[in-house]
Image (tube, rainbow, N blue to C red; front, top):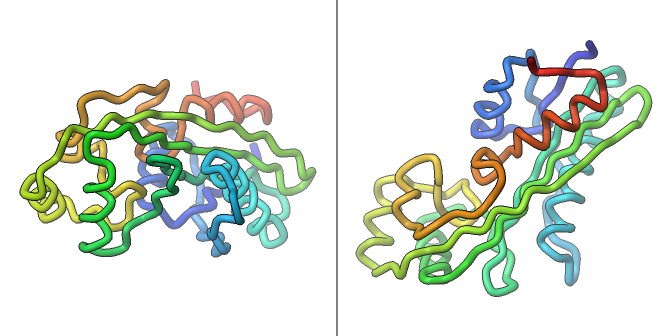
Length: 192
């Protein structure tokens, strides 16, 4: 089996990939993650995952490179990582009582052959009507500044929702493992 690289600096993605008991190295791809004009969140997530994989291809010429990206959309507005306290408050106010769609892409690139397979997971999160006090309490406890949509569903963030619709709870955290397993199978990598 070729060595595996996770094209990410995300601790969340590293922890998720460790669930599959595969040996891998994580390397940050350092790409521009800006959206293009009028780019749909789904297309943005898929494009960024592919760009991340290709960014590491030349320096890792005989590897399987796994890359992923996630975008969130509320009322047709892309929600990025808030980065700070005030932005997190604003995002959660915007999402209060609304449905938010999360697109989590994944791709696997064989850097030697340039063969690539990709897929995308859609997860829909339904937010409770949140008071400002609830939002502030949540942010002060979890500090979700590095998470798209300003929450961590694997933690206290679950208290913000009325329901979640999706095929893979791992996707909402940042890496769709069910889809990744299927992509790895295309390269002869099995997890069992």
